[in-house]
Image 1 (cartoon, one colour):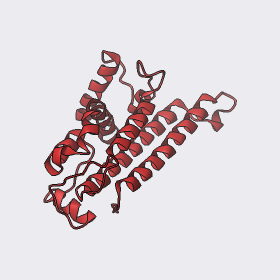
Image 2 (tube, helix red, strand yellow; image 1 turned 135 degrees about the vertical axis):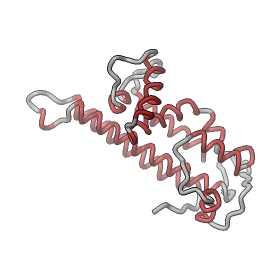
Image 3 (cartoon, one colour; image 1 turned 120 degrees about the horizontal axis):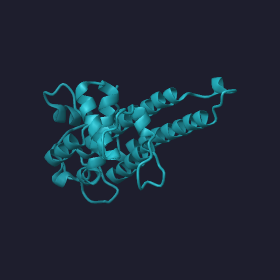
Length: 215
């Protein structure tokens, strides 16, 4: 069941708690993989298992972020306060949290919170100047678009999702490699200029920063 919220800070707290669990899970997986040896193989995890687990962590974290943006967007549509103390002005006048979602959803079968472009357009439509949703999203738009392409390929594994995923791969390597890495393998690839951090960790940091700025 979708959650109903009272204030943005509660949604942020839950998200950061979930994110912390995923960060610890990733660290545990890394430890189990790095300590593996032929004599203790049954005690560790293989590279294939590590890649599958990494995909699961990424996808679950992305879903938690979608839940967060849904929660705080509906709260801001009720003109709940932002930490900056700048007034949030909503063009909607919902009488409750569920009512806000009903108004925004209208005749659509569901609301897509995975697309940064959709969230930005929605913020411009329902919130004056898009505040406080628009700026954190536009400031990280390229990264959010790339993360969504990875997310979609994990979820759908279709020819369309592969085409979009290849664009992310090409941006990272400068060319498309002969063997396309799985999303789990790619997420464990270090990014240039990131002090050795692999892409999953950059994903964690990016969502953490956006989430904090949203609230």
